[in-house]
Image 1 (cartoon, each protein chain N blue to C red):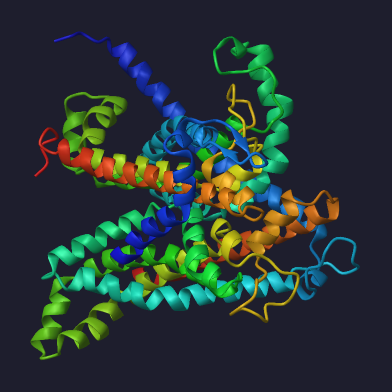
Image 2 (cartoon, chains in turn blue, yellow; image 1 turned 60 degrees about the horizontal axis):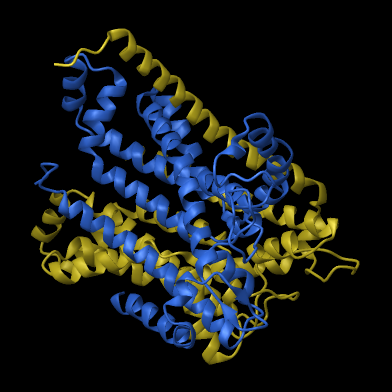
Length: 285
Length: 285
């Protein structure tokens, strides 16, 4: 197992060494992508990955939390059925979300949602919300991702909420807390470990998700100017260009893989460290 | 203490409740929407021919994806054969042999890292260790990639499920004079058999819809999977991707939808079957 993980890192580094030698750390901040001139930069992909992930989390987190709250307190029959439904939502393969996004969500975005945002709500006054849209782009990708990670986060949150000792809940209600206060101040504090775990699971999935994003993001190797722009993510770039790449470009793609790997690893290790560092503060044994 | 008006607190609580219900409704309706769209688009082109004909480039008279179905089954089965035995053993090791704490901890850490690993990186890795040395894409490489994806999931499931077997069972088995191996295999594993199977089947259904790793490993072929060991092997997820994105023809989209329908029905059936079948057993005991 450990060998496998170590092998991963070493292999990726080896395969990408050519690109690192050629571009150095400037690779991370360069936004040029021109296979013909052999100029490559990773910045657009990195930005795309981060932005889609953030959009996805912003949409999915509150929804997942609210849904989990409801499931826990719903009558037993309903909560069982809803639990199944969420599990099934998690089981649908990402390709199918991708197809749905390509043929249903993207046109809908183009014809209804984005015009509504721009023309009716005049959100284009906000920076990074641009007024030219075509249905594909960062925002659509973020929405699909949020739908995909919602069941994961929700399932974890549900387990956390259910694990809170009844005494704690009863005590909270006993001193006159409303449900919101009880869940915010008591249950969340108690289960912060699990909640964070759920968030990080969702984060990890959103970072690495390929297919669904590939279908709707538009795959432009440019710096996006706003959230309705076509862009790309690391994994989408990999899937898109790998087949026809060779030589230096292939090595560049491996370098992108290294960056993605580092992002995922740092999130994992960062979360473990955070939990460790705040252990005493949260009064855990 | 700061005074907070009861009305406001109750109002906030009401808003939260309404939001919860909306959130869960939103999640469920999206699921139904996705499923409905796939069924709606998929059923039009669905015919018996699709299940017996081989896939072909656009323009030929017969369409089908029988080879892709076979290929998917082969690749997934191969992955199961590769991943299940070692994963079960690793899970048993983690939960039954508590005396090797350090080894166990490092295995657990590696497992967590692997779980958070984006599937496309797994594809890249297998591409480098299998496809490059052998010089060709193969179904076997696809199986290996999926096996790497399945492995940590099954390990964790096994560990958790075995941990739920009461200690009294273990102790009584050992007290009867069984060796440790017999006690574990015949008593502990047998009593957790259903939940172990559930975990394996669920992880199988998960990876059978994975696309990203297969793009780099199994690729695709318009032929029946005769060359599982050494040639590109057809499979459903990649077929869907190819037909939906890389082909401008309406017929191809249609077939893509039908393939999506088949994958979805397969995955959902396994999920529902596992849950209903094994849940009843559990309560029966």
